[in-house]
Image (cartoon, rainbow, N blue to C red):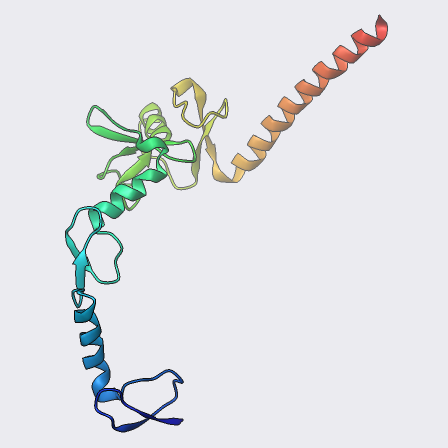
Length: 183
């Protein structure tokens, strides 16, 4: 520990910090003076977007933070469709605002393809059930494009479909090469 001299009261004090300027008694007083000098409020300041007073460590108020977080959604695609609000998420899935749904997330949002499948089968989906998009387009939620799959078989089922598609492509390429060789 080094012995230092307080810049406010000129008394000696011990400190482990190499850059300590104030004794423990004067430290809070120095902080208050610093805040007043910079014309900042002690514990709150206005939100830069809307001007509402917020905590000193916050960058935006809650409302502006939620608005900014909406930029995760593609172009902030919010539109009304009956009683639900829909959101297009970055990963391509359409989500609907259904706060009373038993499987909604913390924001009261449920993926639309799960709602469509629940309407088709007439019950809520269980946690181990996955709704698979047959054509691979995540925002194509037509009932004929959706299939209900158990979670443990979804990976293998998707892999088999991918392999079958690859086999069809390779068969087509092979047929074209055979035609080219026969000429």
